[in-house]
Length: 374
Image (cartoon, rainbow, N blue to C red; front, side, top):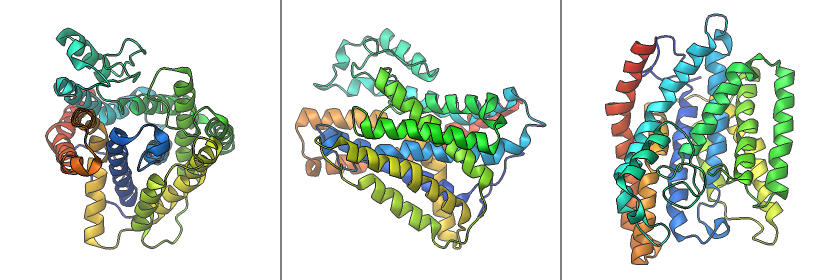
């Protein structure tokens, strides 16, 4: 295992990071940004470029389960459930709040035919900001954008709600299971997720972002399979010899995300099968190889460190600018080529903003909360 220095915001007893896994998380976050960019030019998931970028969320859930299992499985004799949940709150929630604030601050610049922001009053926007900051989902018909998202100011917040649920399940239930019992949970959830993907209404698992029956079922199955898979991997993990794990993993994530939709609208099951293979086989193998690998050069180590540092902030601050970009493309009737300077600016700007939020907000706030809560 190649480790990096602990950030100043870490707890004193934080274990060393798996550097390559940090890097792969950053690569996956970048694919999410690109996936969201192309939403502006898609009529549905059938024709969207970077077609399977939504699978990065499942990769994040597996990584999260692995890291939580690695970091906390052996601490429960000295750590309370309250302390664990406080630690996770400190790690996750500051960026949830800043994501809501960023979303609110540019909301009125996002007007287009898909949603009329001018109808939203400032008090309504402030209420929506508070709801998002506290991770309280907005019911369809009551959210201010009107497109059905449970977090209309910053869509990706939905996965943080599920992440919290995963951590709560771990604290009260999953950690107590034997490895055999945890394997059964993984198997049952895997059967459920595969059934939803292959025989469900969409032929994919790009769900979880709305409070509708299919979204809540699919989102729950995504979490209930991927998070326990990560926990299981952490329990059974024994490093295997592997060279170039970061580059192999990064290339695989990019290829998996960029594969066009499979089967079209006639054979939805084919794409569902592809999603299932990625989540149930490819991603667990990548996590295992990434945890086994070592960075041998300073350049790769620094790159992994940087990508790991910005991965979560990037995921949490980029989407408000996607709304803005979407509105610009629709209002001006632009092709992707015409919008390319804006797309490049969005990606670079989001990375810069993510790094700024990390250093000027997230790390200082986490240090402050650590001192106050511990």
